[in-house]
Length: 167
Image (cartoon, rainbow, N blue to C red; front, side, top):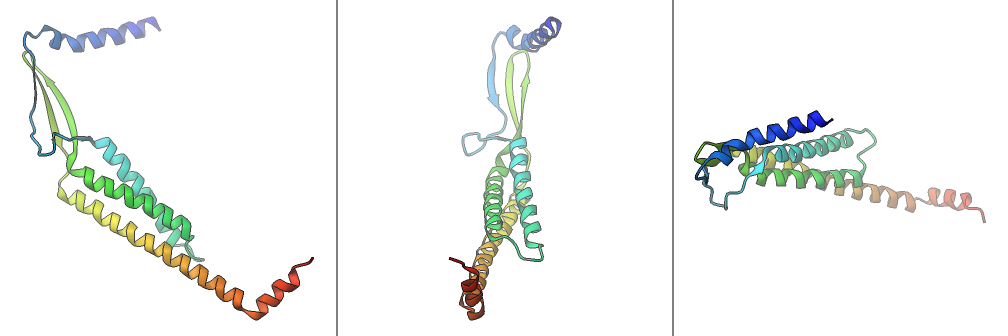
């Protein structure tokens, strides 16, 4: 246990030696952006995008059911997927891998922006699909309420419900 701690401390010190030994250190960023150098981690983009894909896949499973999609579950998962895809669409142009390059006199942060505009368009298209599924859920609510109202107004069903109630 002590050897592992010693090894971790030694590795950290070896990593920090170039920054300690340099006489004059300047910090710079190699990529200039308009919006105050915003860069989101690529892993965060992937996490949000995959969560949106899971919500969309759940919606597709709900819609593919024979007896009809559950309205509230479809609406909830569609809203979550819609918000995930919108967040991913606005995050995509600023998702970057940030690499810190250290030399003897300079430390430079290099941001490699990963995604092109088609990734943003794909996210916006998937958000549109989720938006349409939200309205499909609302339509399912309307269909369920109309079927229940029709059943409640049916005289035979009313008589059956009256005979079922025992006081």
